[in-house]
Length: 329
Image (cartoon, rainbow, N blue to C red; front, side, top):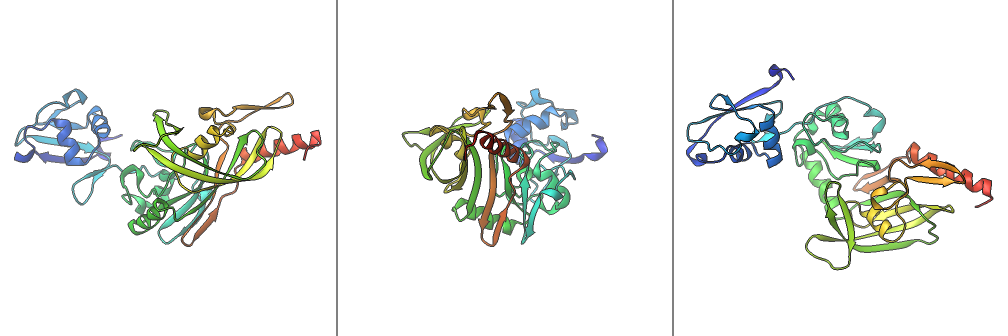
């Protein structure tokens, strides 16, 4: 990136910040997390008294009157706090657009596309596309790289996603999700045969990070969450079942973890014991992701659906054709 593309900021250390470590000064002055401070120092875009301060300089103590210069492609908000901006990237947003009104954009997220970037220069996420078409999303809600995010979907999950373009809309719909005033329907293709509708209830807890994984726990604690879902059987095959799932609560990997615990992991969900390849006679079919699709959301006056994507349709069609050749169904 050319230096002319960077914005320059200068801070003079006051008496209140004297004897702070440099990383603490940057964190408090700019509103940065430790990870963001580390990345900023590693970029060589920080100078202390005109000298470049690298990551190894994070422990230096700043003194009253010291000059700290920061060069970033992001900006400081009206309160002088640092806020990372989403890189606006115009790509195939239009085919994803499902609904837009009253400060809310609804898209059908493809599987494999993250909701938001993790770094300011990351592209290829839903928010990159939205920021290109709706620049007003910058700074809404949590702000920064999560601007406008009302709720989340796993990277591998396809389907309906809401993003707010105004603070009023974000507060309204974020509150609706937090208070379970929504109706969310998912379709899942799971291993094994399920014959009857049912309701699953359990305590879930995040048990590992990177990659994140949750587990059903027998004893609740402060880190666990009570979760429930209901499902109906849409269609059964000899080795798989298509379910229509209604979420009562929303928690990380909830559908994936609960169905796996009860013996029916999603096809393609290797993290939770699902099969990556299914065999129809001797013909292998590779399942490249967990077969989970966020089909619809109903909240307030919004009632939207997203068609089941092509990869899931292909697998369903293959199973149906296999049934027909075997005289099943």
